[in-house]
Image 1 (cartoon, helix red, strand yellow):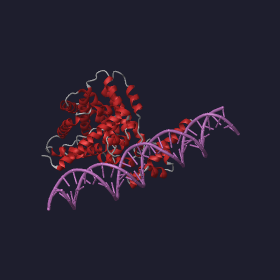
Image 2 (tube, rainbow over the protein chains, first blue to last red):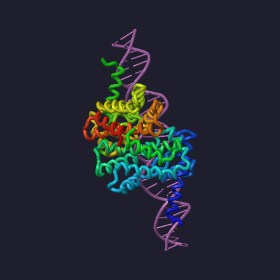
Image 3 (cartoon, rainbow over the protein chains, first blue to last red):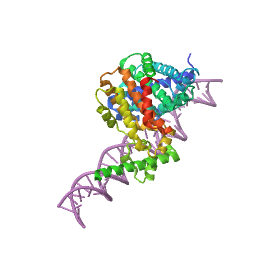
Image 4 (cartoon, each protein chain N blue to C red):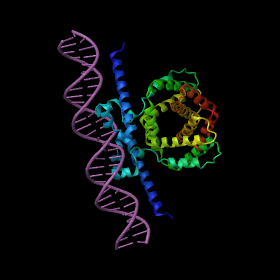
Amino acid sequence: MESPQERRERRRAEKRQAVRRVAVRIALDDGLEAATVEAISAAADISPRTFFNYFGSKEDALVMEPAWRPEDLMELLRRRPEDEPVFRSLQAVMKEVGVRSLPLWADMQPFMELQNRHPELAVRARAADQAKVMEMTLALVRSRPGARGGLHARLLVVGSFGAMISAVQESLETGEPVEELLDQAFALLEQGL
Amino acid sequence: MESPQERRERRRAEKRQAVRRVAVRIALDDGLEAATVEAISAAADISPRTFFNYFGSKEDALVMEPAWRPEDLMELLRRRPEDEPVFRSLQAVMKEVGVRSLPLWADMQPFMELQNRHPELAVRARAADQAKVMEMTLALVRSRPGARGGLHARLLVVGSFGAMISAVQESLETGEPVEELLDQAFALLEQGL
DNA sequence: TGCAAGGCTTGCAGTCTCTGCAAGAGTTGC
DNA sequence: GCAACTCTTGCAGAGACTGCAAGCCTTGCA
């Protein structure tokens, strides 16, 4: 049975996705500059004001629903055993995050197409979250026993996130399973490029 | 002797830096939301319209002058010998770029402070260039002989840029020389984290 | 010195993103 | 069927950004 609370959340999520689809379609068909908030909300049959109840910014509606919020990722990291090597923790969490994205990839071809045409979109839309989570991850890595200097910690973090993003993009492009690609990516990082 | 052309360019660059300083100072003293284009240009003694002759966006004025444009970096990469291993080419170019930044770091303490408080600023301001240059680098890496698959190429690119950024930030924080840190970073990438 | 060409600065008007507020409509719980 | 709650919307306003055209200033040259 579904509680009213859950019901509301589900319908909200569905509406978000519906608006996203409309927005991306407009951007693909008529160009990015045609995808104004006014145009999107008209096509999605909501008021412009309501658009901003669903999305914090216009760009938000033009990129894929994120599979994780910064807090989620940090929570996953903190739950890892204290004595696990940091590299393994990062690998495990990135894998979890990558796999968790899968169900959201149902109808993402248009998103990929838009991402190819305007690669700066995702970066801009997620800049704040990205920066935040990388900063927190860096702090966490440094606090772990066995930290090997500032530069090493930084490389661990940028490497891990880079590996995840690379694996995801490669998977989207070639169709290979993300999990394997993630393992390969981390193996490359571990053993050297 | 200085040609009139050069003279104009120099004065333009000086003015850019002057406006930058003013903008960052306001953001640090009164908060980011107080740093409106109107406030900045008033403090810099130019009209708001002129502000946009110098900067493509407000955020542009709040981050450090970039040491390279995408074309510069690609040019550096293309000039590398054809038979050099890609990894070495990337290492050499990133080193060149890192070192070239040095003269621009004369009075960057305020920029660092702002960057610490709002880490998303630089990402957002440089998103388009960053995305563009990484895409082009990826294409170039893939076209080089000895390419080892899509995932490997992606990791080379994100790893190289990550190494450069990590080394620069670490150097800014600890005062260690960038060149050494860059070598260390690439050694870590090469031999494994 | 004086003038023509080209660059720089500016104001203006307009578009677009985004926000706070408050009114109204629809839902839910009892 | 009423009270509390949530959701949608309009409105007004701030702030980023752009194209255009007028005026100013510098530079090159006679």
